[in-house]
Length: 259
Length: 262
Image (cartoon, rainbow over all chains, first blue to last red; front, side, top):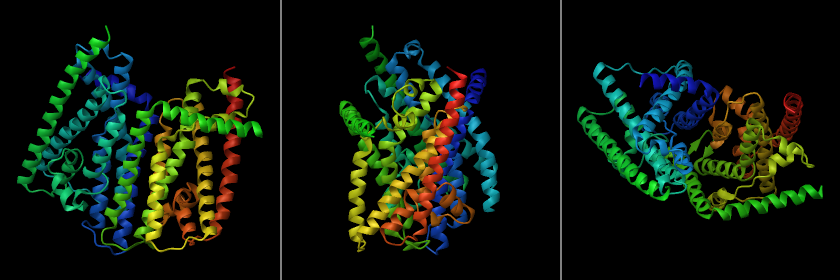
């Protein structure tokens, strides 16, 4: 696996211009939304978070957003449609491992850009990020890895739909809209209407962005963290099951149509 | 001149045919873009919560700005972005020669040939929303203000077309940059809220240098009759400057291109 990531890093190096642009895209929306929140707080509006908390939150959204980011589905769909998936039909795991390491490799590069930008923002706004104790740190790491895998596999499954649907991207986009609203990316979940705030505990979206952030900022009791992990791992397990099922039926369907 | 006009009409018609050919695709993307637009409008509603004004703007005025951005981006996706994306690809993959030898002005051809109507539903729906919003706001829209608003809107499209065209030309040298359209989209996103929201150096940056004010803020202000006329002059200046620069840059790139390949 280590060699694969090394190769992925050298692949990613070729795309370093693209990756810079992707990082830029990843920070623009949070910063724009943050600017509006700051304008609201400075004109004396009542908000669920203080200005400093908003800045902390959106910086974390930037970081977590890039960490869990995934973009594989159009490539998988293209491979399936063009037939280039054929070598992997019997050994699907090798493609997943390769694609995942490409993903990780590109993310390492993205963070090379992102970390100095984040530090600059922290210095500029004179906001600090709390240093966690060991337990919080480990919980955050665990939730981040689960979040990344969850997001990755959901996107992967959308890509696999190409076995049946010609263009599954629009379905993926609709998931993206729901995700953007309910995961904490657009606004903190605490700002959402009560109904959606409650729903977000059961839906998978919160566990991709907001959950790790909530643990890190000590917004959850230990009990809530445990329940959160249970729900997060439930969804992760479900998506793994969906992935395996989709792949199995997809391959059967595929080889029947091909030859 | 007539030849160019005929070409434009042909491209407009062809875009419709192309959209209708992939009907399911067209419909599903139309709905997706619709959801995205209303999600951003919803986001604005959520942020406003208890506040009535924001940097001198009321909630409805801010909603108007967010909607105008959606319309602007929608219009860019119909007329401009598909061409810039293909232009970028042609430069990187070397297919530009085909268009350079045509008896029509190459920049015109490359910039107008693709018209994609996927965003039409979003544009129509958000326009209805805007009209509804304006009637709720109890504001009288004077024809002169409406005209001014449209002028600034179109000016914004021209200015950003020039800026993005120039950026796409960098593909001659930055051969490994494939996703300029993401970059363009992000830049326009900055204009989602009134530019007065940005403080200090950023507000100067976004009014004069990367003039995102023109994608939504200024057209809205013009519509409501609140715009300082100097912004019209600045828009004209920007159109001139960006047009001249992008044309110069294009010629510069072409000269080096034809001397390199051949």
